[in-house]
Length: 636
Image (cartoon, rainbow, N blue to C red; front, side):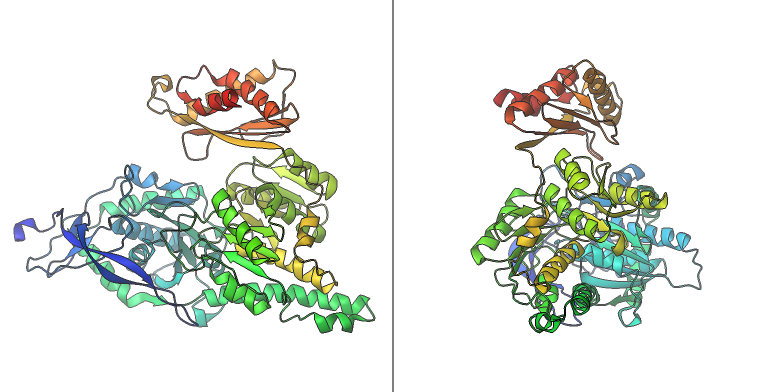
């Protein structure tokens, strides 16, 4: 037995487990418990980690099950290093300003690359990065909060990344099931009863991606970390991982057990959301007292404590982390929430993808509104940093409509302000913001962090901006520390409902629909994804990014020869062209070897004309898969 010390042992069989969700109550954190399932299955790789010898999983469970088991042996431990994941593999985990990867086995062609040791290394790396940024020394004890969404891999990754932080000497506070916006807020809250503020914060999530994925988002009180910071952390993590030994992993586990605390911070976060609506309601009440002699009549029927009393609002959390919004935010404000659905966390997402951009998800919340004759429907993504809404008629407020609605609300409060959006917003939205609302539309690049950072930049140079919002549903307000918070966006909408009711308007969400009257919407819109074959000889060993830029350059050069097409005078991403009453944008994906093509036009025929213009320019690029474009212009 001793001869095998420190080696990897494969094909060890263990029982499946399935998650059972425990109830969550005041002061308690929702947790997962496990029960045995009788069918055995291979778990993946195991490594020695302790003395007397133990096997510890490197977290590669089959399918959708989370398992951690220990087997006692009589052999002594060795200091042999665990299997090494090189720097290149770590850097591939970067997804812009997030870290994302595969955490659960079971999907063909998607090997696990976020194991427990990888997460532990990332935790240790974030600790080193944070101590450097905070200029901390050994006498200081920095505090990091950790939360997660409903993913089935969440708890093991939470414990693993906690070991990395605790092993570096940091105080670790686990929040359990939480939202991404709450994690950032924990760096701002000052309340020692909840161990706040945190010096840094980590959210374990992969947004709306499938059940087998997971990842990490990082915050300080200055906001979310940027791309350069994430790269720095991953490079540190690769070096730390290379130094791991069985002994060091065991020591970190012992150290973590002494320095990890648990807090239900969501009590604080939800309370702040409720207070925000009540504060707005209070401001409305004071306005009524000031301007109406008979204001007491209004105030009798308008409760500042329950400003949403009488409103019927349904919530769809998609089995993500947003189920709290119905019982913890809407009901204390007086709203009726019957008919709300998929509020229980379930990391397999059995009902629909928690994604406000997904057609099936939007159909589900729309149907719930109509079936329950509700005034409003609200839907969140998995970690609640994105949201969308539906009015009483079933009309969706997402993508351009959500931006138009939020722009209308913000421009009432801040006339003339600049609204920053991503690059795929419509020309009709620009007209609506600038001609109807009197604001300025600044169309920037894709990527919620890009949009937010550019709004911050504009303010720094004297151009006032109070809203940065992407068509994906990421929306951030200056008043809310530029945090993309789906719940806070909905609070702003709820404030509008409460305001209308206080003024004697009992039309429900009709007031929201009226705010976007005049928004010109295209009769036809489509997004086509043109993939770059990275193995094609046409790339000549170069990167897909270089090849994509060459495609864009060719398209840009071809536009000048067609009098029907006009390149956008100001554009920050890709090639945007108007013509035939519509427009198209061809851009290079932020992370993938793909050129997304967005087309909007007043008719299908006009859209085809725009598609043909793109096809004529790019068809000679053999490394570009244009089958989707060919099908569109041919089938249409």
